[in-house]
Length: 133
Length: 95
Image (cartoon, rainbow over all chains, first blue to last red; front, side, top):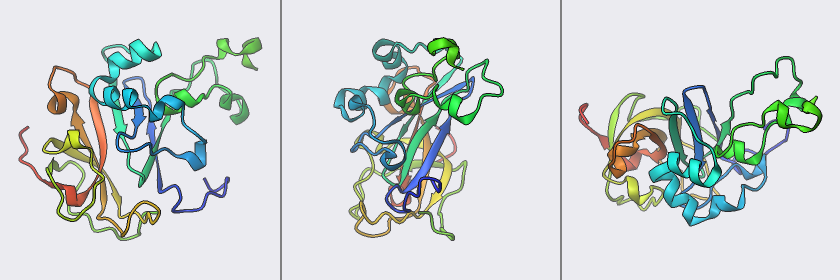
């Protein structure tokens, strides 16, 4: 945030929800559409959509599978973060295997807007053009 | 931004219940979570947010709820909701 010179107060506080092998995080703002805009730009269009807001808090696991094609194992806890404008949440996706020694610039190519909301994992290196390196 | 000396009424691990209404006019608590029980997981302090709030609101907590305690069913998944302390009261340890 300091690198990007984001003024304090516009963003509130940044919350980072880190995914692990046993925890998958998702972000929503059911009251409005709070999001760390200043840091990450606009969220995906459906982030503002009532159909997303209403179902993701009730039944995130099924919604991820049916709408976002993300099937999570039973031993992974799904945690939905319902934000206010005071703490703007983003998801820190799990680092894909096979990325040891990658530079920040290379790793950034694995991050999508969906992975920062939590409706997708980071891109697998093999899915990048020419293997990504 | 968080203030340096926030005075939280709650501590991490405290069981809390969300109030059903708020006499102070702070609207920022989703309806579906009112009256529900959870556990405080993060203390954020009082956050100056002049664009959205007409004054500085009470300190903010992240509170963790089980989906089944909120909507029924049998899910082990969770909801983490950021709530100002004027919306929270202590709850008994058993849920």
